[in-house]
Length: 437
Image (cartoon, helix red, strand yellow):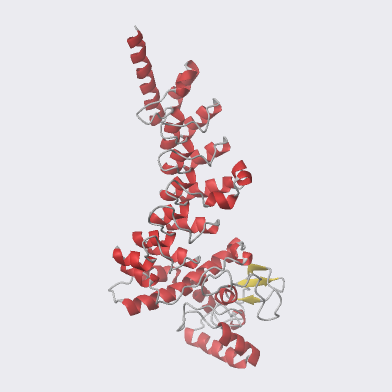
């Protein structure tokens, strides 16, 4: 008789999990109402509970039913994985959000690699899940007990942070998101390799990840436990393009100056413009490096460079000469310094705020000053573009525009000429060098 009850129990459990997997909400609700104990049944060798199965399969309606029955959101399977970890692993953003709302602990570690849900989201490249978890970390007890910065850089059993995993798996969107939220760019793993995120990106040959890491100050000269720099790792794995950019003899890229909160905590719209200007400047550097390194039938950077066809230049052709930046006379004024209100282009703004190489001992910790009035800049905003369509010839040609720029340049006084010479346009001979004010 006992054996028959056991068979019946397994049959009901199997039927319940099939209904759950198929998203049959009515059957699941009826079975839960009839026998609430079924909520604690497990299946397969991983001992997955109904909540684990619903989270992994993205069954948000069933997940809500189970959570409404007061099921523990942090219930563990055989490997000490929570439903939140499985949802982050599978990219089930709705389930991730619902579990966080139900109070799921974002700082629980599994017993396989001692990873958190943040590690899983970064490893599998689910940037939406990553963002949801990072947002929750600002308001949960984790922020009070651990601190947000410590959580972003939490290590797994091998000493890898989420940034290490995202770089290793070639997940540039996750790399960018983690860096924007305070991930340490040059920290080494605790395993025998002692790799930095840049080492791992070089090993995987991810050009996008290499770009992001370099723009945030990753050290090209950092050694791993075997005495290798990222350049050596890229060569070993035959990633020639990455190796060319990581070559210690190539020009340094422009980077975000981490000591300046003015840049790190920018107005979102202004940051988009400045980030594009920085990437454009570094793209010019990359093109020059690759042109000197090797010739290919189709450079992998060309597709990226052609995207949007340099929007700032297109907008400049529709603007009057009075809208041009008075420093470089090339780009349209799209950044406004506060509180003085003076305007300049994003490229020249980067000249004021970026430095060549991250060096905490020499980097200026103070805010930059306006090149026009020399007052301290406390904030950068997107400047409102004036509509001068009535006073500007709509059929203006590139040659005419060039003539206007030359004429305006010659009419400026000596102080503006000095500024133009000082801050110049990016992409000249020393494309990787940014002059400090």
